[in-house]
Image (cartoon, rainbow, N blue to C red; front, top):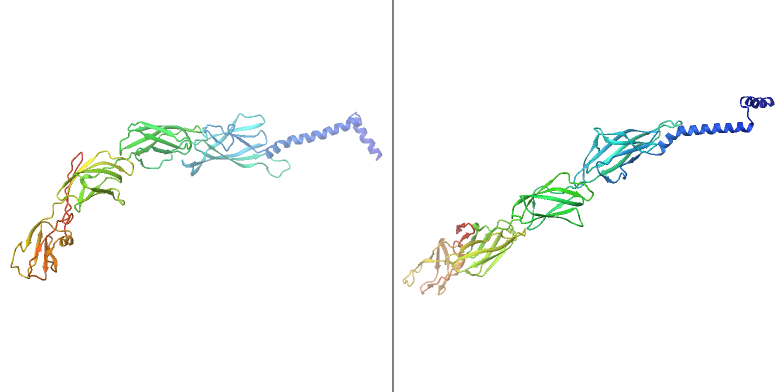
Length: 456
């Protein structure tokens, strides 16, 4: 043992003619150098394993909306990490944000300039164009592989990572299909998917307009049509629009509107019912109307609540056989539009009911006891009960009424032998076969022949 101890130092001293302390220092330096070389060899793998790849989008976070031309770059450690695969999916959404479908965007990663000690890759379409578009919602998937550790059995690394981001939303009109029908002097309301900064419109046929955006709810804009014709269609085309986020309308948007039309009385269909009720139809729902009658007669106007296209004027105690001139001076439809043109028409109440024949005749004597009293009217009787109530026999006799013909009434009294007198009272409106006649005029006179009702 003593010999061995003396041999090794001598051999070392022969090879390295230095002192013991110097030799110890050299051995320690060798050990430290070995550890340093091992650390350098393992550092890339450790960095790639512990530090995931970073995605940078022109200085903004991945959650913020950005312009479609913003560069999308992927930053990785300069050594020890590679991207095995990359994919980009875009969600297609409507103006209200509802997801309609998702599609894959063909993309690739190409080298780009970046900071030192890191690898920077830029995302682009396979054809070299920008992979992003307006109104996009994107999902970027990276499959990153890192260097294997020497002592590990398999590759260690971040693996698959996803990043989600969106591009700027362009102004899109939330318009329903079909024609927008406006109330009288009502503006066209335009609802948008995002707040607006400004917009411009053009109208066909040409018409002055006023455009305004709600200062509080900037998703709402209004277009005032100045001096439009009633009941006419216009095309309001939004030619330009800018969102508060700076995005611009991608293409012009047309909207078809129809202005409110004022009510028009259908004077050709006016008729007089029951001798005192004027039926006046309209071309649309009515809110109110005014009129005059010459010669003056008390009257009451009404509108059918179940069908506001029908209105009525009830004459209170009109004179029989009289023509009345009616002028519609004003009206307002349920859409708020006023009457554009006045209208006039004439109605004639029926003439007083005439008795053409009475049998037995006045002052006739020697009438047989079984002879019936017969009264013939000049026209068919609609209200037979009213006609019978208007016949007075003096002194009163019991009997019954028969109607052998629509114009003839027969009374058969049981007791006779006393003188009697028939006193028909004045006829009342509606007792005859028709209610009268009507004649209507407007700017174009259009007579309305009355079709008489038939007695049953």
